[in-house]
Length: 416
Image 1 (cartoon, rainbow, N blue to C red):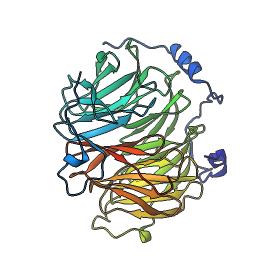
Image 2: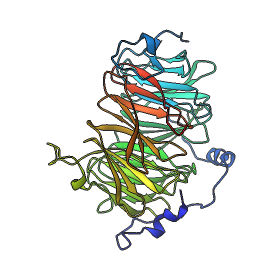
Image 3: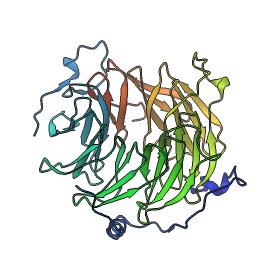
């Protein structure tokens, strides 16, 4: 993304009150430097094999239409989350209603690790930056970390009800947000801990920025905080007139971390400059372009947001089934892509203008953001798709569904 799209060229709110800004280091550190830097954090102590059954090929499915290459059906309840390992994109981890997570091979569905011992539905499951570890977290707040090679549990900790879980982009450090408003950060496997407390209610969503030094967290009361991970303080607080008027549901950052896009139940997406803490843009639906809904009197909650890496575009997914593609700087809607049911999640391909969506109708769709036209549609699930992940090359997607299954779809496109 062109750096000219940053806040100094699209400042729409120059005379609004901004919370005190704390200067941050503008240098782009190397990953090794970041890992060393985290060693200096003053942490305080805070307590504390599978087989290849459960998957089947397309020919064995009974569904009327199944476009998938492989179905993983080991889970005994709804599958809530899925992630691909960042190092090779060859492993998937899924978490489900059966209080388990599975690490399995995408090419053939072979189970590599079964993550057991949870006391509630596993709603978060993510790989470490080097794909050597996987963390699984359940709704009740029990978090476990596993060594994939040895298949051993190497660390566990229990917090309040878990909202989100994420690894640091280049260090063995795990972060989590909970419904009591706290963000937690642990060194793994030592368990040294640091907490980031706020007066806000639930820490509903969060993300570590690419520089590895800061994290952005959204809260139920509409507040957004940019945390300095080393100092332990909030560098910026966006609230009141600048903030959302409802709970944060999602957030995403652009490739260099200079901008964050937040989504809320209030129906607005806000663009925040992470260096200044200033809101520099706002996106909302043009009701004249949206199909009428019987729920029009209610705010249209935003469920997912994301930046295109190659064009100055952002995508916003709404609960009423609208996918809005907006111009980054002007906030003008370029395309309105309508779905028959609510959108749960969106993801841009890393090196193209294709944005994919999963829906409550059980379909996965690919859209061309340049034209707003649908490029492909994939079926096979008999219930809603709750999450999905796409590999770096954009050649396959792995889904998680309420039908107790995870599927691998080959994303064939005419331009490939």
